[in-house]
Length: 142
Image (tube, rainbow, N blue to C red; front, side, top):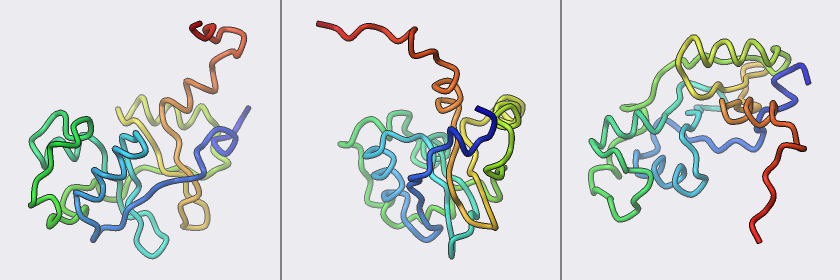
């Protein structure tokens, strides 16, 4: 295991800048994700995270409690809350480079870009899973 491509998630859920905050919240809840790349015409222009959503909604549990919904969230575009020009890596980057960026930048995930297009995402969870030894997996409960 040497490159990001070997452990990245390739089935990436993304939003567009004009999508609503409500759409981002719904997608994150459904996929149990903490971040979504923001893509415009196939190009990553930002990333929206659970932290961004907490900041704009003022609710710490916005992703956990579906009963919390607000009419305004349907009218605020993702572009108003996303981080622009996120740090990214190419798929042939070493896994150690991804780990270093996550730690140094204090972020939880990186879009993976090839030829200007989103091809995957790598998260701290992906890195930890790659390090786990299958022999150390807990026994399923009876």
